[in-house]
Image (cartoon, rainbow, N blue to C red; front, top):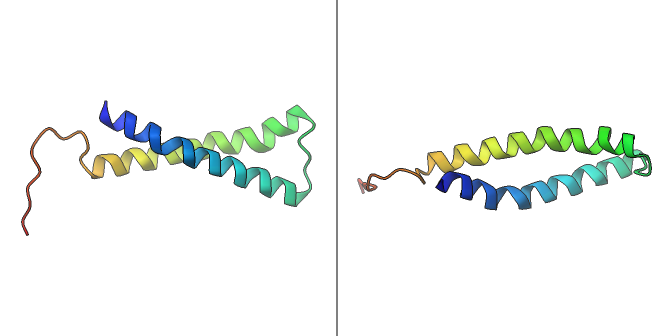
Length: 77
């Protein structure tokens, strides 16, 4: 449960920034957002793929930090 909450709180700011970056890139390329089909193709699909990658990376980071490990952490130093 802890991993899901950690991923959720870290995911939304990353998602918002990626959406902003995609919109800026499309604006630079001269693609307008008035056509909903083009919007779906040029913004939503990359966001879907990027959000999958972001959530996977955040989940791996949370597991690496042993967020859900019930055993007490040991220190060697």
